[in-house]
Length: 84
Image 1 (cartoon, helix red, strand yellow):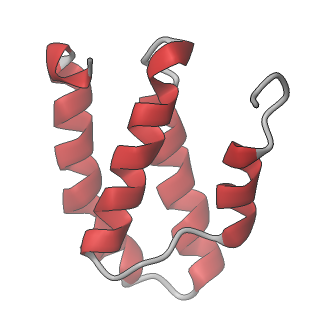
Image 2: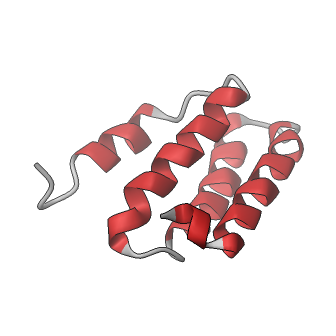
């Protein structure tokens, strides 16, 4: 599980710390571009079988700050090829 990946845990902490800075930007497009870049960098570090766990944790981080992920991001994760 993700607990066995200390680098990933630190990346989550860094993502949480980056949220206030990202939210101070000029618009939501800039926020999402930067946020998703950081989030995708975390996802690329874990095996495919753990990427859903990472996505869930990223959604939890956003939710704890009162932010909803964009609908296209949520829908994209639900409609991946080969997923039932």
